[in-house]
Amino acid sequence: MAINLNIIPLNKWLDIKESPLVISGPCSAESEGQILKTAKKIAQVPQVKIFRAGIWKPRTRPGLFEGVGEKGLTWLQKVKAQTGLLTAVEVANPGHVEAALKHHVDIIWIGARTVVNPFSLQELANALKGVNIPVMVKNPVNPDLNLWIGALERINLSGIDRIAAIHRGFYFFDKTPYRNAPMWEIPIELKRLIPNLPVICDPSHICGERSMLLDVAQKALDLEMDGLMIESHFDPDNALTDPQQQIKPDELSQLISSLVIRREEGSIEFAGKLEELRTEIDKIDAELINILSRRMGLIDEIGKYKRNHNITILQLKRWSNIVNDRLKTGLNSGLQKEFLQKLLEVVHNESIKRQTDIYSGKEE
Ligand code: PEP
Ligand code: MN
Image 1 (cartoon, helix red, strand yellow):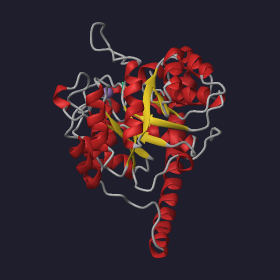
Image 2 (cartoon, protein in one colour):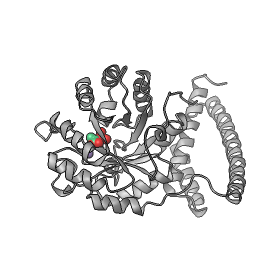
Image 3 (cartoon, protein in one colour):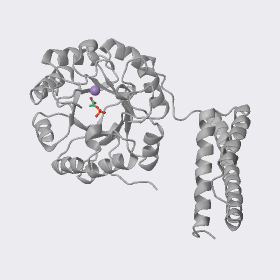
């Protein structure tokens, strides 16, 4: 079911002539010179509308560079005056909000480590009551869509209606090529639940290194994300935070011009053919559901039969034979092994669940 948030569309408060909308700037503000040098270069890229810089940095261990603090906000005012870019900083507590407002920061964002904590979010929401500033909410570190939605709701309930979400990837227990696994299905589901919510992708924190930035940025656009946040620094290798993932302003410019901007809708013929293919998909999905329901009907029957004969539910040998057999058939039909494994696991888990319900008498 859709979730109703009162949101002003991005193009009503931002001038987005050149697509995609790009937010860029260093991970951290380090010095006035660094900020201005970077800002002046990236301001020449027409898609860059917003200059980002962390002033207060959430660091895992104490003793690391924790940001320059409030004095960095005066540098940002100079960025704005000298380049015309809007400015954005991360805030994590009401004191940060107050300082950002005092220095006329244009946009604030809430970082991934803050979004995990509903108490912090509520404190920020309270501090934002009656304040007229756009707020961007990063996804929480852990892959919990409801936590992300809850944060957006808290901010919206405080009266902020210029809101965007930022997809920066998620903690994943297993090794992946990314610093933060993108888990694209989560921002897609967010968009499905809150269709009027702009979602901006942050390839820098997803990748954690430069070589994959273009691919992730392109994928974000292909998935109809509304913009990109990409970290840039005039001397990335010597940056005080996130040195491996920041890129030079000219690399940013190159990356943006390499992006393929695809349209959401095409010609009448295109729409006709697409409709035809979609109708076909609808039919196949209906068949798929019907087949699954028939499979589960049989599972119930087997469950009752086994129960009546006092046989255990889980028959591992049978299951591993099924997996091997279905994998072989599936692979021969051109399906990917990982997909098949996941699918079989979901089906198997549901089958076990139905049978345990039967054994415990919940289902007759
Ligand atoms: C950042 O944008 O520099 C940052 C700290 O990001 P995140 O909150 O996504 O880790
Ligand atoms: Mn960073």
